Length: 304
Ligand code: PSU
Ligand code: MN
Image (cartoon, protein in one colour):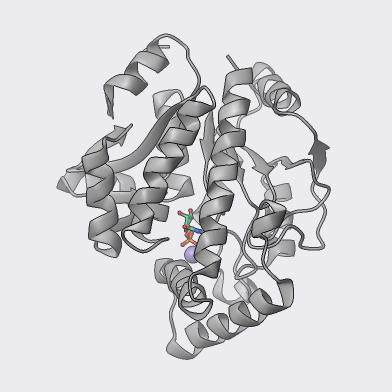
């Protein structure tokens, strides 16, 4: 595949794209806004290592000095992690503005899908996607991640959606947008910290080969849009449902009482949950991201 002139590739990613080797995209909002320093940098580096161990080249995506970067070095990861929430959280609407101003942006799932598609990367691993927020029938707060999945042809591997969201409405929205939700060895949509949500997935698949075949068929048939692969958190890291639900309930109430809205609400809820559960949720978060990178790398290897 040819390189895109609008993208600044790392040498390793440029080589892999040019020669059609497997690549896995990774996001940067999770580094700057989703986890505290220095665990965020450690996690980002481990994700890159796990991708390599499973046969794929990692491509962490961010905007740095206005450049659309696909593939970062350790220094750049350190910068994004250390600067934290001061880096602009960048979704579809933000990319062109940040680029034109020469600023930095930490890319969300939607933002990373855009860069991945531009760069020719087909598979992307993250923790959880954004979705339809509870109360969206009044606030209209629906993550741009869902729109992006509806239009951009990248396969996103995640551990489901947190119950800070309305998981049922999130699945309805994905159906409307024509996004297949594939459960990896599960019949249920996982709820990030826990393996089940009570909501079913569209298809259950047992192997990375099967998933890659479905994605390749979609591509061959010219049906645009993403595929969502949901991979439950490993059993040994899954949290007690009643406990985490109570924490999430309280965090949502606090956000409402403080009037937090828009792009601030997801990072606020994530930080609340982490503070209240004293790091247990962070360990779970990290474990499920690693698990997703592993699966994404295997899927990417089957697609070449
Ligand atoms: N959910 C998580 N962890 C995260 C995010 C969501 O469990 O780090 C981040 C991702 O980058 C996701 C973004 O794309 O938040 C969604 O933000 P919003 O709800 O504002 O669309
Ligand atoms: Mn939102």
